[in-house]
Picture 1 (cartoon, rainbow, N blue to C red):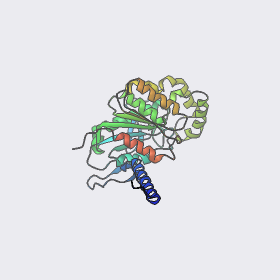
Picture 2 (picture 1 turned 30 degrees about the vertical axis):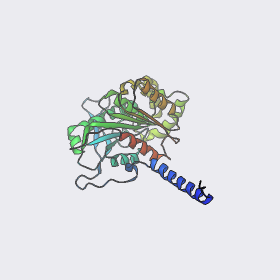
Picture 3 (picture 1 turned 90 degrees about the horizontal axis):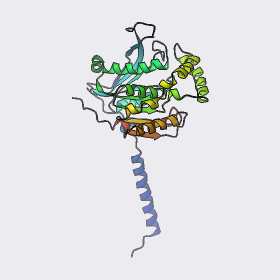
Picture 4 (picture 1 turned 180 degrees about the horizontal axis):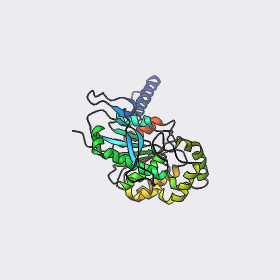
Length: 309
């Protein structure tokens, strides 16, 4: 029997390790939408617009009075109509995930990024109750036939994604609207479960961030949570979401236990389409932005959308 020389064996090991490394790198390659631009469409190029979205007025105003939410819509290239994501930011919205919005658009989806009442120049007063209504108003905006035509929207193909407080908002909106196709909750804050000593921490956050939000104070925000805690728990949404895909992305933050509890509640309700992913990073996914985008794009690619005519 021929014995392999030490030199040949060494070369064999080197080649094997190289091929293994190449294979592993290929397996971890981010989706193309995260790292490369699609071919341009001259007739229907990717673009963006800044519509104002009508939402309800204050309780003491007439029911037909609307306040306008500032928003940006990223429109995918191609004639469409395109499936569309509503991407809701957190409290107060320092991280608005625009890098994620661009990746989603490169994957062929439109992305609407709105600002709640009283946030970042939108009209009106910020509150958690108002933000719930504002999220629903954004869904109706996309379904309006004139808007669907103008922005190349497939009005029956809407997915909601929310970060932090936005994660609560998209869960609640989808629970109330069975026609939403799916929900992604990124480090989602379960507002009603903010208890002491966590409430003390939230109060400090409110002091720092509430100046960015019109018509509210740290005290009023704490009071709203204490008064409406039973209505601000996203675990209550699990049964209504049991038949739809739900992506739960967790970070090493104060929300991780509630995030995992939501995944468990969904599974207990019979949801077989729960994707739960933990990343060792902070609340803003500061050093996992590519990983965040990759996870969301991979999840969106599981939806079977109607191909445009």
